[in-house]
Image 1: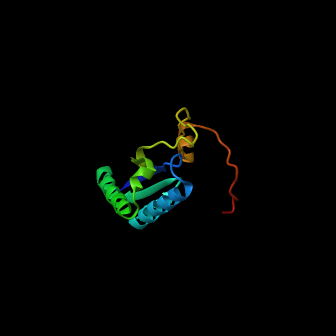
Image 2: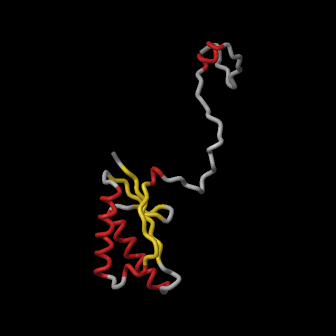
Image 3: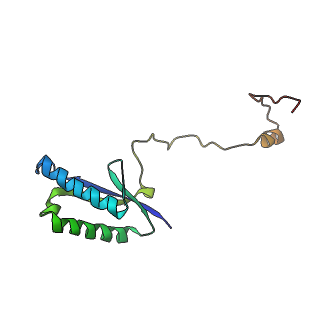
Length: 127
């Protein structure tokens, strides 16, 4: 079963210089893209057969590799978490919790239950 995970990383722009954060961000971006993540909506997204714990371990190893090259790498990160995107709600989308359920009904079903209807486009009788 394939899982879709989102890796969210927030850097400490309040206490670190913008230039330093830009370098750290570029290291994170390069590493995640090389590992197979794509960047979408401020999130590193990956589809994988791995579970959350396995992908978390992989990301920690990748971050350790960055730490080996970038002194104090972890001090730049304020928040970093992984979510299973399939179980998340995008709050930027409209709330559909009170919407009406719509069911497809064929013309044959309408005929069967005796509902009158008009077709918008009538077929040519010659067809």
